[in-house]
Amino acid sequence: MKSLAELEAIRKKTLSRINLRNEEKSETTRVVVGMATCGIAAGARPVMLAFMDEIEKRQLSHVTVSQTGCIGMCRLEPMVDVILPGQEKVTYVHVKPEMVPRIVAEHIVNGRPVEEYTIGAAEKN
Image (cartoon, rainbow, N blue to C red):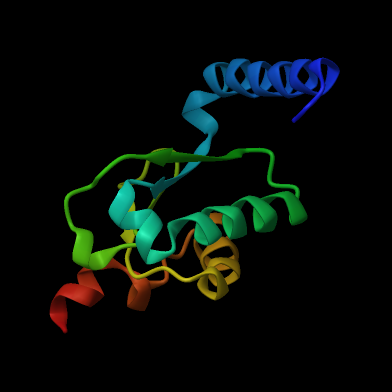
């Protein structure tokens, strides 16, 4: 169990992130991980943690990681949407933690989606 001081520190950190997100919403890159029961069962939690670790490691302050509920395509889980400012969202499917560094490097940092990991590539197969 966390102490009251630890909980207050977590609260302040979360509130500052929310305020920062609201101020810079148009300039923020968003990573949204499907975390419904099907996503969690397919391995979404380690994927979300991998995104958080990679983004922190690279000190990408303009990127937020959040979660969403059921996206409706359970057979493609874990699913991740990457939304760069001013661009269409890109949906990655069957994401594994080892895929995350490449997605971050190529798509989030350099603006080039990793085509073979996307829903479009999966639907062709």
